[in-house]
Length: 352
Image 1 (cartoon, helix red, strand yellow):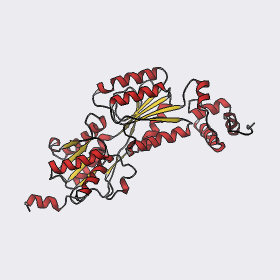
Image 2 (tube, helix red, strand yellow):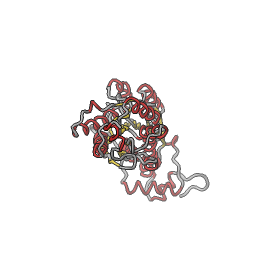
Image 3 (tube, helix red, strand yellow):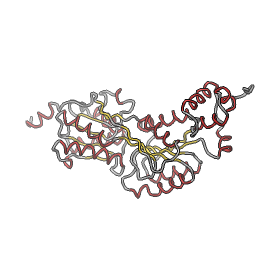
Image 4 (cartoon, rainbow, N blue to C red):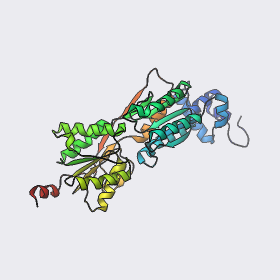
């Protein structure tokens, strides 16, 4: 019978959904043993009744937390914001709360944040963003996470890491290859790359895709300058300034994420450099604002919210015998920030 007064109880949800209290509890927690149809019915009933799980009571009764941890590099970067939205959306549906930690791409800070999440007894940890090319930079974090999983916790990563965990892997290499082919197809050969630190696996993989496309076109990848700066909007501004100062013949800048590309566009506009007439600019990720810029940003689309959702889904499943891999595609999106080589190149070649 429905409780009179106060907030609805789990028993009220179970009665209204026509299931046992145990089934309702499993459905709300997202654990195994409940069909998808029944779980959806229970969650829809809970939402309709305005039921809010008593997290403290559930932890005492079941011995497990209904909080999950999300570790991101830069919460202000739209890439991570959109991944977080996918994690938060699924967590809400499953009656979970999310504790978000910010690392600034510093492996020591990342380690501290992981230890904090473990100390707070989260049930799962999603590590979003790039790993580090040098396995030694992740060795201590790997040990912490292995202890966490041995104690019953779950871990999923987004991107390539030296961690023994389920992973959601965007096709960074092929996406970078496609956007480079697009720029080459517009007649550009004086390219430069705006990159984050090459210690990051995401940067290494995307740069490998750029180099693969250059080699396919018969160009020497070593002849294309790679300017490194923080993998942020400010870093993109720094890269644009350096590229045009050190490589003034450049007609196309390939930024390895959208945040850097937006910084490049900002700096070029401040300097009175026309895009794309003088310099074409590309990004990578297709963050929500990419199509609203002026000019709209040519970029590579990753399904970031879906990546966050899939990562949490993996973390909520029973562990497999070996780490599972979920790959996601990368699609070229052409907008107005790229165009054919302009008159600047013709004038420079003629000495005019």
